[in-house]
Image (cartoon, rainbow, N blue to C red; front, side):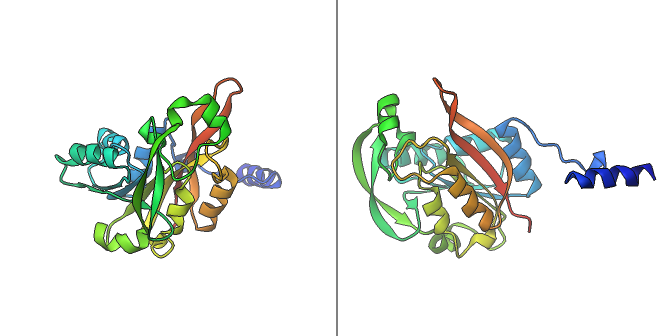
Length: 243
């Protein structure tokens, strides 16, 4: 009787009581959260979009992930280093291209710090505050839809996790997945709160697109702040489908 009353009162305030043994433990550390998510979804193939020189893939191995990794990186110097770092790992394959909403060739702005290279132009705020984000030159790079590449890079039964880190281009990459979105069980994306590039999608817009595609947030972690104001610049957003 007492339990029913508690459930009733909780319902008045929009809550539902559950048994303690049904609560899923979620880590407050991004790396541990990622590890839990990959294990929970039984992921065996990670698509690493915007790989730079392989930091993310190396981090996956350090977390104990032993499945397949496919990395995509368009900037030539970064790809050459990525190729070398992946050469001793038989389950890590790399592609010299970007992903996007259509197959094309596009100029990418290569930054002083290569991880900030982007198809978008640095805005006035970032240009004044972060010198390492400034562009040194442009490169023409191939852009491909994941729809058109998935059969080449993945097996039909692969349990896929999609990682996006493309400096403002994540929604373009996601648009190129529309024909294979049902193959993706989990994903993560850098979402912008304080934009550092012109025409960068806002975090509300990004979350709306992902939610409408059937993805649910499992973790949201700030990865950069504007120090004088403590404003968040970007979040890493971790998500999963419920299928």
